[in-house]
Figure (cartoon, rainbow, N blue to C red):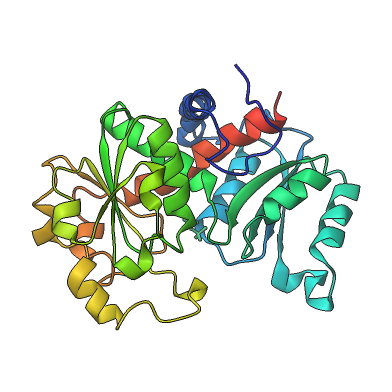
Length: 305
Ligand code: CP
């Protein structure tokens, strides 16, 4: 089976069979990163452009590592060091990159829909590395991969996502992906940070963290996205932490073999207590490790054939 598309824009579009294909392919690529010489020739002669209009540690560097481990040429461009600061438009910027024969453009942008706009106008494959509050599909794919690796399955598991759901592209992508893979999703957060009608996506909503994590197999804590909030949704971060911080006492409500996840960056003591982030249930750094394998799989499936 192949992917049915030239671009990876969101989990909403991907079919369950395509998600399974990406996870299976990532499984075979994970081994490359354990070798003494972490390199295969799969993408020799291909050019990958990382075009980031927002800060990133994990996503940008793992795409770069993924491309380099597959022998592709990888170019990183950030808005602050490009001709965007001289007034060049997004369309002109990417048309110039297209003229240099890039094979895939990976884009992160603060405006929702920008990757979709590029996908309509460019021949190259486009990968959405996070667009505004809309989607972050590669994060959801690495999250699904990590859960499947640890639990041996996805269908039938209950995942509780805690935090600023309204402004979280990670939450949206995970909800789409997890529901497609047969998982139950619980949402927990202040009512000001839960989108109206989110139940229509097939999730259960809780306003008390203790109820939302009861019986959870996996708990995912999210950062409050202050940079995307144009008004105050909370009395204070201290108040948020009092009501929603994932600490050891609250964890007791979850299953004994619960997994703790966070997409990063962490705000320790706000959405997650340090002893939980660093504790035995945490698989936060496994998520980061698996991000490389999942992104290798995506690059292979889009431009490696
Ligand atoms: N999870 C994630 O997108 O992290 P970065 O912002 O560091 O890429």
